[in-house]
Image: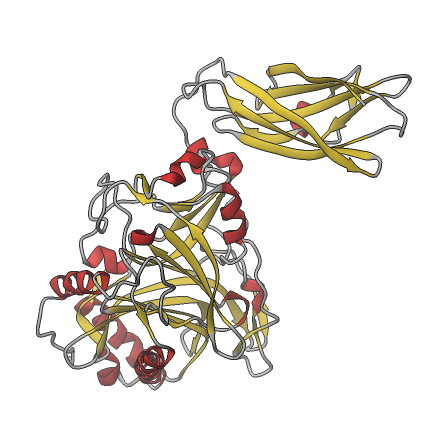
Length: 489
């Protein structure tokens, strides 16, 4: 069938090259690294041309960006903590952070997370297709924050995740696009000059163009030679994959493939290549995000894995239709993907947007008990904004064993004279109590939650006599009714 024959065992070779890549040249802690991380082969185009590099040895998370002139620069650097144990992740529960190239596939917001995960978390696609080939196991690898900043004093404090501070996750989120922003995790980064990276980029781009051309031209023999014997994709091994592809090629009378925003990352001896793709033929018309994993073999590169995430389709070669998404969360920059007059993929006004969390799939926590214990504390007035006062406070569990619940919170301000009450968030009151408890600020009481907002001041000469916090469970049970401040003008 024309399949290429490897002259060595794929898994053993990849594991060896991971070790070799991890042991690359190390820069002095006192000197900035020379060149760029050798993982950054091509960052793509437009608003999503960012990549994240995590160096375990330096406890660092760096964000790189490709400028309009093609130069790649480091835009931010953050402190990060990784798994308690060193080395690459191999098994569930080994408390190691995986090393490789991954993408963010879901965002989890504050109300879904325990205190140890902070205000936001991003799921990584570990294990990816290559990890499965290598027999790597485990799940639940995230980039997340923490409400326990003392954890960041330790370079290794997680069970396998990458951990940053709450403030830093807010900033890092600006640079993340689901399914498109790569995160490269290494034991120790090595660096190359832009010229060396450019040579690698040309070699891999040439291979990708040849593969796409063989696919579009239905040249099965050339297409099949682009794959490694160790290939696995969509649950299929190479022979099953090629048997199905040969049947498709034989039934296809014409085909066209359009790609955009190609990103190429390298880790050791393999590459992760991701791009938007529209495939059209007499059989189908589908658009999505394609990721392929390519290993450097003795004679030439070979594809060892593929992943496909359909995100929409086009009709009549002109208009774009966003069908029911088949992703766990909608890709944040889909609005950038459209078709030009010829029906080709185009990126329109690319700009970063923070992806939205998946409305489904809420966390299934441990068994809930009937008596949650919640504290409202650290309340302070932080300033005035016109006819409103600004405040901050913290909701927390009294103990780690407090039950797991969700609910709603109000702050009710009682003003002197005839001014009565005002409330955060805005909601109807009756005698200083919310009429509809479900209109409050939604929260989760499993973690420390910082609450910030403003409350209306009825008149400039009004005296704030009391701030009261009311917390209701999701079922409407009053859990907290406490005075936070009195006699504040």
